[in-house]
Length: 168
Image 1 (cartoon, rainbow, N blue to C red):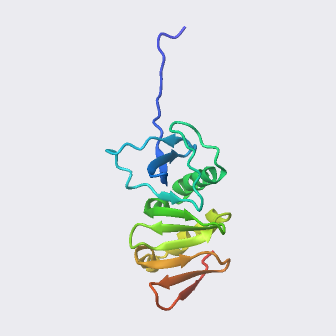
Image 2: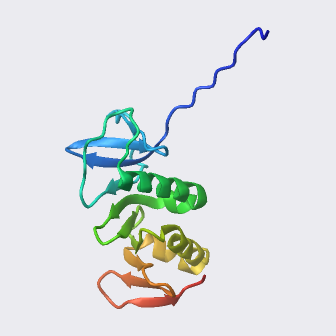
C-alpha cells in the first residue's frame, strides 16, 4: 500500500468573455461558465458577441448551447495553433450570415471570414503576416477580408482597397 496520495488541482482558465443580460460571463475551453470577479483582470481575453444571445447560462455548469460550444472549440484551437493571432484578438463577433469577424487589439483591425472554414482561413492570415513587410496590416486600422478562396483583401480606412494574392 502506498503511504501517500498525490493530488493535482488544475484551475479552470477563462478562454473568452461574453456579455449576457448586463452581466459578464467567462467560458473555459471545455465550455464551462466561470464566475467573473470584478477585481480580476480579464482585459486580455477576447469578448464574444453572438447575433442572438440565449442567456440561460449558470456559473460552474457546462453549456449545451451549440454556438457557444463551437466558439469554445474554435477559440481553443486558435489559441493552441495560432497563439499570436489569439493574443491579438480583442473581440469576436458571429454574424447571422455565418460570417465571423475578429477585431485585433492594435489598431482595431477587423478580420472577416467564414465561420465554418475558420482555421483554414486564419492560416491564410498567419502565412500572410509571416512576411515582415505585411506586419503593418496587423497593427493599422484596416479591414482584412478572408471570405474569398484565392485572395486576401485589405481595406485601408475608407480609401482604396488593396488586393494581395493568397500565399497559401
